[in-house]
Length: 272
Ligand code: SF4
Ligand code: FES
Image (cartoon, rainbow, N blue to C red; front, side):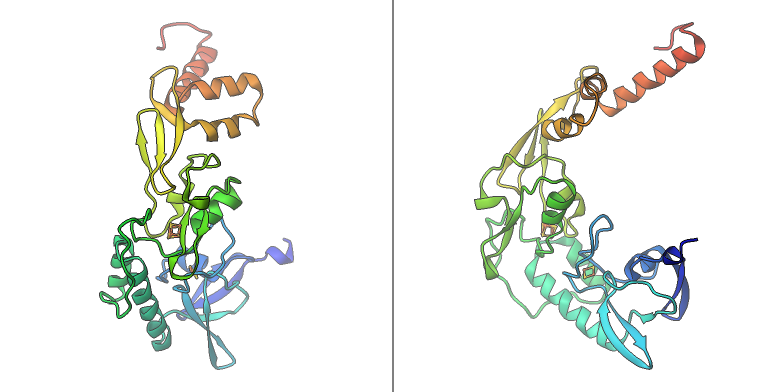
């Protein structure tokens, strides 16, 4: 086995846990069902320690050092604890800040309450026109997934200081949005609103950008954003692309199953 890829053993709250080389402590804790609250960790993106909620203390030569577990590499013998009085103090302040920053996020409220924080001493004026419903903590995951994974770069941080929000550039309808919905999927606070209407996906939070959907030739259901389909289909041969573009996943699955049955039975019988 490649030495660099050798599994390592780490200690979390006194429990010995196996970790893959190159894994972060938060990922190990999630697998081992050790509770560490976190908001800005998304396995498909490089961690960048934005929310600071996943604090742990590393015990080194009898001294404790506080750091974020989503950015902390698992190394042989690493010893961490997740619930010291200092961590609880910092974490509670962070929860208070997030309760003030995103007062309409039910997810934040529930998470904070699980850690005993139900009120905040901080205050931020609620903006009735906020396209993210006053539920955004500005973690940036949506911006990063749109840019780094989808390659669309349709959204960004706009304005400055206390007026900073995530939106489309100049808060205008954008042609760059693929309508994939990855932003909403990774958003830890449930802030992003997307509405599927007949034939159209409306990115309500992103300045109401509208993305047409592809209709299934067999069942008539609208099933995928046209822009996303076009991007994916460009990588396929024209014959395969035509097949894939015309049918929704269910009808395509059915078509494949029928083809296989025909191949196996030599086309005998009625398999509709
Ligand atoms: S909308 Fe969600 S993912 Fe985007 S910055 Fe706000 S909290 Fe993070
Ligand atoms: S999850 Fe680690 S800093 Fe946000």
